[in-house]
Length: 206
Image 1 (tube, rainbow, N blue to C red):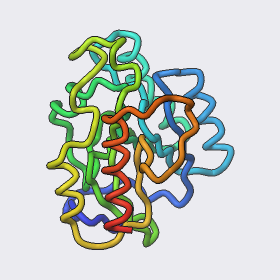
Image 2: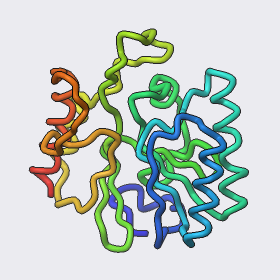
Image 3: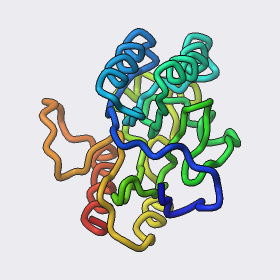
């Protein structure tokens, strides 16, 4: 692995084959199925695109998080994830996890991909941009199951755009504005703003 930042730190094994998944929402039986399938397909890692189920301050979800290292070790897999909009973002962002290259080590074999993290796998340049707008925001309690930092800030966007070099793969929970979504919903300005930010990253650095 040839990371773009953090080259002086020990890096996880560079995966040659990835299983890509999304929106686990702490569903342990479903995660067990993913691990089984990843091993069956000879993958070395799972790349999880947000809404993993990172809620360490809620008992059920805490138990799910503690189960991940055991399941991953049994299949010799690593798990990399970007945060979605449905995670405990205060706990995730404000906890001082060990930094391993551009990644944050959450648990053994479990790595968070922070916003703007950059790295290379097999010559491809990756950039991670987690977060997204919650369409069910009005049904959630601020500071408990909804967090203001769910969308990309102007500062975070500016920092990503300021980095030099093109990117090959954008790892994100939300999708750029130019990708059509057939949800049957009226446009929501805040959601569109976040998706436009992702589109700007693609347009400027692709």
